[in-house]
Structures are given as C-alpha cells and as structure tokens.
Length: 307
Image 1 (cartoon, rainbow, N blue to C red):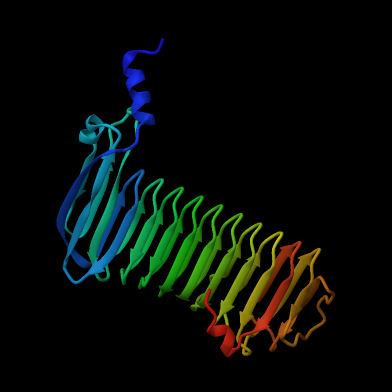
Image 2 (image 1 turned 90 degrees about the horizontal axis):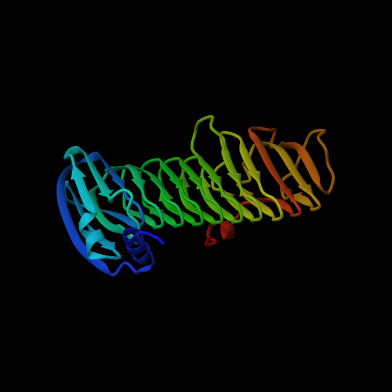
C-alpha cells in the first residue's frame, strides 16, 4: 500500500487549482534597465507605462491551501535590473503556479521571460525580448529591439518589430508582420507567414518548416541570402521588381515558377529553376517537396494584404 503522504500528494495532483492569492510588488526600474522573470505553470503578460518603475502584479494558485502557502514570489533588485521568480516547494506534487501581469518603463529589456504551460504576451516599445515557454503561444508587438522566442506546441505572433527576430516552435504556426530586420524562423507541422523589410548585414534570412506552407513578403530587396524550406506544402515569395538575386528554386513532385526574368545558364525545368535576376545578388533559395514554389513580383495590392 502507498504511504499516507503519497496518497495525499496524488489527491492534490488530481484536484483543480482552486486556491488563489493575489500579489503586487513595485520596484524602481530605469528606462533601458533589464527585467528577468522565471516562472513555471502560468502566463506572463508585460506592457509598458510612463513610470520609472516595474509593477509586478498577479495571482499564485494551487490545489490546496497548504501548497499555496509554500509558493513564494521572490522579487529582487532595483534600478538597472529587477529579477522576479516563482519559488515552488521541491518534491511536492499538485497543480500550482503563478500568473503575472507586469508593467515596465519604455525601453526596458525583457531578458529572459521564462515559463512553462503558459502564454507570454509583450505589448509596447520595450528594448528587446528573449522569451521561452512550452505548451503555450507567444505574442509580441511594438518592440524596438531584437526578439528571440522559443516555445513548443504553440504559435508565435510578432508584429511591428524594429530589430532582428529569431523564432522557434514546433506544432505551431509563425506569423510575422512589420518586421524591420532579419528573420530566422523555424517550426514543424505549422505554416509560416511573414512580411518583412530586411535589415543590413551578412546574416541570412532563414525560414524552415515541415508539413506547412510558407508565405514570405520582402518589402525591400535583401542584402543577404534568403533560404526558405518546407515539405508537403507550397512556398510563395513576393519581392520588389528591383530584386537582385542568384535564384535557386526546387520542388520534388511539384512545379516552380516566377514572374521575374531569369538570365544565365542555370538549370531550367518545371521542377527546377536556377539563374540570375537583375544581374544577380544574394542567394534566393526556395525548396519544397510535394508542393509548388512561386516567386512573384510585389505589387501595391500584395503590400496591402492582411497576413
């Protein structure tokens, strides 16, 4: 027979998290200062405000009053750095965690935001975001800095980002709209749609998925290579007429096509196309299996399309 204590833990594990307690902390945080949040089993929501402070509000929850009292919200630091941690008792079973709603000054850097089994949402002109969760979606909007996002079993949505973006998920879609910078996006079993204005520099734009379509709109000619890869789905890339590129379009069990004039002695068939666009430039490589590949000229009607 199981010991009595183990039996109690199993009951707590099965019980809903019906015990809750609100919390609130305020710490001085300079514009450009850094906020770090380490959470598990709960959401993190961050927005900006006009105060030189970080306001940390939320609710901790558990399946029993005993477990609830053992959860500690640890807030440390001030000025240039504030750290927030959810400290849970080790070796204890049961549903427990915390949900955060945080306000930070304009320009604050969020590095890192970490949780599990919860969403992460950031809205406003923070100076950059590095975030990681699992089994939850991530939504980032209006950031004036670089963004690095990792999740699983959840989607990623980024809008109006002035900086580079590195995005990784699995079993989830990726949506990027209004990025002014370089993009690296990777998922599986999910589609990718992106509208970007590529930034300068040698780092390539890379988009990779499987079992999902890819739609990429380049609002300016890229200064570095563009690599787009999927399988069992189509690829559509739109680019300005001024595009200069070394073209490599490939499909297995599908067709490739383009609106652009392609020069050079590269391979040309219904499944492969290689050559130079407008005299050549960075590599533009689009590859799929069991799907079509299209490279189209960007027109006014396409720029206005909603993702």
